[in-house]
Image (cartoon, rainbow, N blue to C red; front, top):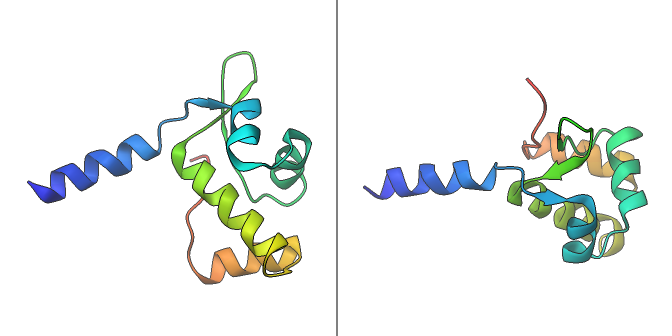
Length: 96
């Protein structure tokens, strides 16, 4: 029973529901920077609506907070953050 609840919670964390401005407000990361982390550094892979708008999941929001911490508090460059995420096998929602 506990495993089923955990699986449901993980699935719910992957549902893309937040628009970029909402994520910006939740994380304190400007929308322009979020787009940059996605386009230039391939750190984020938000879902897209049919109209092309980005939608982020709760997992994405957690990842953004982690990236922000690594950059602002730990002083890592974005290239170092990418390497750190890969080395620690942190999942981003990559398209399949």
